[in-house]
Length: 310
Length: 324
Image 1: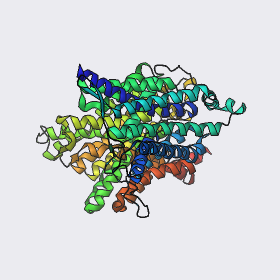
Image 2: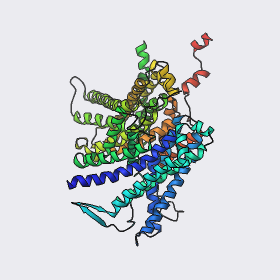
Image 3: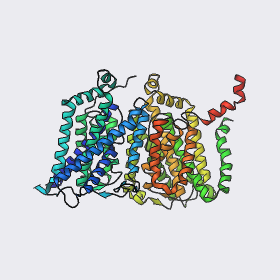
Image 4: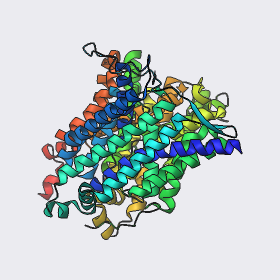
């Protein structure tokens, strides 16, 4: 029973992480119909941004909650800027070109970030950047305390924070998309960018905003993962990115609530299958789910079937 | 007569390749073998990424499937002598059969990966192949029968320059003949406009899957040849880094140009051999190459043109002159 509860807790926390990353995929796909391959690497940059900020603030010596807040906000700013730049410099010039061109650029940007971060340190940088291929260890942002125990399962303030922050951001996103003017514009662009433009919606600005929003969520996910699993390295974004994409497809790509549900289902199924049956094939589970979804319900749980027109 | 024409490249190729193999010093031979393997990989990937307009980024996964199958077979039959054949001929026959088996298995893998993902639009194939590439690595690392993370060692040194050269000739003539066939026309139609192709009666899913299976089978050939040259088959050889190299070659050469792929595979292999010391910058260069090419010259070096088409414009055959 306690083993089951432990897997449940782990699965939910993993699932919320996947959901946060999947939201970025699904929103960008909604407005641009492009799979943003670099999204997993924005997540990686989020973790490293937090890592450098934490060292700058001296978190190692005196961990505290205000510093944690600074690390979170700082990393979100870094990722937001990165997301904005990627869209502005790499995707926007290609928006009206064949789709394949944008896809290849996205793959290129993704590998540029992954391998750029694996380079040896540049001598002119004041701090240890790029970090190189060896894994780093994320410092403890604030002291870990056990809040309460259910049977043998202990819930620490870390777990509570991770879940709380993830839910907070998802509710916030829900609010932005359905209750603000920006959200209405975003939905309009995702419905039809040309008509939205004719209706006076600044399409370019909305697309930029969507990238920033998605990247911020990715950086939050990265920090939440890094505080509980502190090993970070330049290709840490590959697998979570892939799995979050599976979550987005599972929920119906382009569908915001779908990404959240998909993330949770994926996290739970991964944790339970890996926990009870095939622990060494953990990474293969998401892939198996992807294949099954593509075979039997390619539009996802909540997606609508759309036919492509000329 | 037609049969003879089909085998002409091979008949001419064998003595030439054999000659090159005799005269080239070892360090040149290594580069030439690498060039040959990369030509096989780039041209076969071009069938999917160039002719069909889909985008696969998991070629190394299929290489792994081919390499492991081939190596397993040759390792098992290392000391077997086929009846009625000389020892040399026997090992060569076994190697050929092992390569074919490798191609069959990687082609089957291609079918399994392609069937679910090619029914949808191109983007899905990219992410599914990337996933496949990672997952096949996870599987191999966890299966002791395949040597786990350390891989299979002691693979017999069967691959020679002649083998690689013949493999490259086979791949190139496959690609050339495919494009000019009915199948190839269907693939080109899918690349230009999938909806229009479907409207004209092309079964797009079927053709896309066929192209993908052929491409994966030849990736398996490349993997098998590579494994029997470096004499070691490990999961590390077939990571997505290898896939990216091949993608870089295809994009640089021009998606849809066989000669472009050949030239860029040769260029990049030789160039990177020269840049051995700067290994860390290699992959960054590939990534930058992709982004910059897409922003400035998305057609690559050759676009969809072929060298032989350009040449035949300047040196028309007699038949063409008579017609004019």
